[in-house]
Image (cartoon, rainbow, N blue to C red; front, side, top):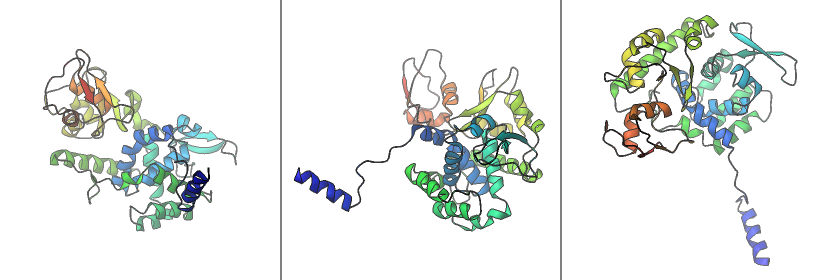
Length: 330
């Protein structure tokens, strides 16, 4: 008994916690689902992905708050005089029926959050190194983003507990801020798409376009898979017609969907409008091939780049899959 007491005393003295902090699965799922969007925002607007995800977690209760589920508002941004989009009345604890911004999608909420931070009020933040998450967290409070005196500490705790800094300092992000890839053409098309999207936002003077400009997402079922946005192809649609509708090159759209061959779309196909990832989300570790399965369809289903699906399983690219074959997805 004395020996046990002695060991516990030593542990307390050297600062080793008796119980390790546990991670919330809902938070892990949120990070897995939206980290790609946060990285895209870092590429476009130089806002640390770690800060963006930490704010999203905190402000939306990992996507479970009323504002998040009913208004796609993940950052608690209220209406302002220049807001031209839809609104949502919400009792925030201080005011009844307070006006908050309502978005067509979560991605639009992330984009508007970035544009919100590009205002003059927050310009001092961009003088900080992009990897200085503590400086950014404290700077947000100093600039008036939140009234909670513990806001910076909450962000810092989330970033450190869930290793969000790895998103900001991702080794696959090169100095220019764009994702590195072995395929230079793919990288060029990604850059082109980002430039087009940025130009569209500049045309609207940092105000999201009215609802009629989101016609694409009203006419097509859409969603996120593995943190990457997709739309569902309608009957008779091709990569050519969709690329025209999306205001991007057909070649770029085909690359995002591993369709550089003669493959064409059929009704119900998932079509990604941003590059897919190298591995599946945390929920999906393995997949057992079913009769009639196609490697391309499996890659699309889990939001994985086709060549990485083959590479992860040590299968030569293009090899047909066998029923009951087990594929590693991450």
